[in-house]
Image (cartoon, rainbow, N blue to C red; front, side, top):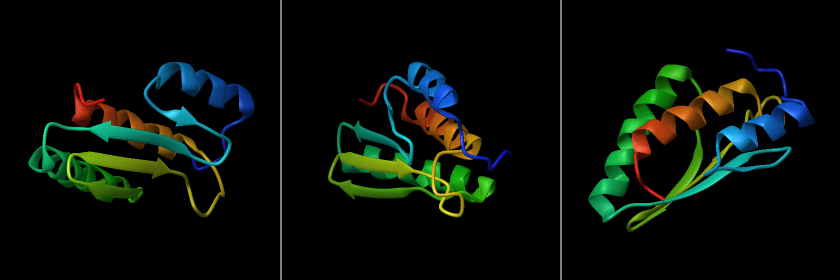
Length: 98
């Protein structure tokens, strides 16, 4: 998967595609709210398995039913296709979480 920084045009396209994510030049951010702690932690456990398989790990935190996620490719200093792929995977795992 490409680890080249996305251009401004590519970031704009990504923002349109990933409506739930805030897209900036340096990271993708999303707040997910679940029904309870178990659902939030279940999401994190499932996402951790995907992230490990991709060898790409999120910056995230959890308080009760809320999960805050920030993605960037640390060694590139910004957003790459790897971040976009993990965001898409997390969207799939999150389902209707908002």
